[in-house]
Amino acid sequence: MKTSNLLIHLYNNVDAFSLKARHVDLIRATLPETRITVAEGNHDFLEKLPEADCVLTWVFESGWYEGAPKLKTLFTPAAGHDWVAADPAGRVRTFYGSFHGRIMRESLLAMMLHFNRHIGKSLEDQRKRIWGRLDYTDNVALFSQRVLLVGFGSLGQSMAELLKAFGAGITAVKRDTAGFEGNPNVDRIISFGRLEDELPFADHVVFVLPGGAGTDGIFTARHFNAMKPGAHLYNLGRGNCYREEDLLSALRTGPLSGAGLDVFAGEPLAPTSPLWEQPNVLITPHSSAISREYIDLFIQEWFKKLMEI
Ligand code: OXD
Image 1 (cartoon, protein in one colour):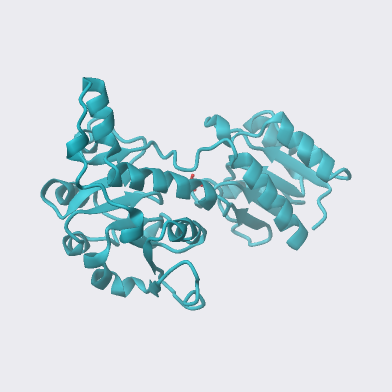
Image 2 (cartoon, rainbow, N blue to C red):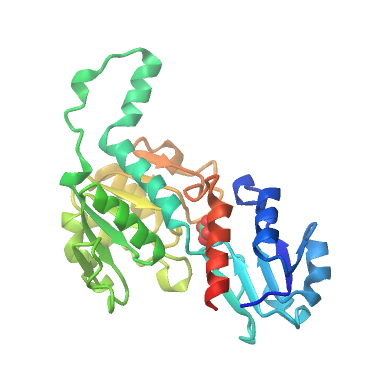
């Protein structure tokens, strides 16, 4: 699709999520015939919006579409639909990012290896100058383990590719499995209704689900009870899919041995949350997608989509 008037507002308080001069240079070089405006803040963005036919932005409220009569396409890096509303009139095509998997799968792997290789213990021993070589009998390799990916959109699929290379056995859970049966990176793909049958066999259960009413509380206390004793849970999607009280209870009294948590029911995680003090929990501050390559990957994906649409 040809873009004549591009308006960019890609500032984010996470520096890696903000547009840099080198990105603007690349866009100018790739689209020499396009008029490119980089907004200087929200006010400037809204002022320039009436002329734009394509927008790259982190935030867009549904009421703003009325003030954008020439707008045809809107692209946001976010995977979730939390910050950019779709056009209520359905006129403007809105595209959400689907490039995050290549970054987030490395964050997931770091969490898994942290638990499998007892890195927390090594750090603690190092601080105390302890040579605890005899305490690693529980070390385990991913190639002997089973991973259950709850959610098999672009993130889950990318994670499966990496975990498969490590030799892990992989089952994916998807609401609608049609068309995914032959995926070469998973051993099995099942519908959500069969999740409870798989939980007793999974060493690692990974949540990469979108937020919203469709996933609210879908993993219940009954599901936690069905998990394999000693299993680990990871959440890199949204924090609404289980109750944190149920998670805590599974961490304190079993069956869970640990959890790697990047997202929470409320963010930032409250200083009073008992999760901070739970010893078998690894907390990251919704940072699993933060990486220097973030905006480069977004722009690559955007160029590709522009050619396709
Ligand atoms: C997203 C995120 O892109 O959570 O949705 O970072």
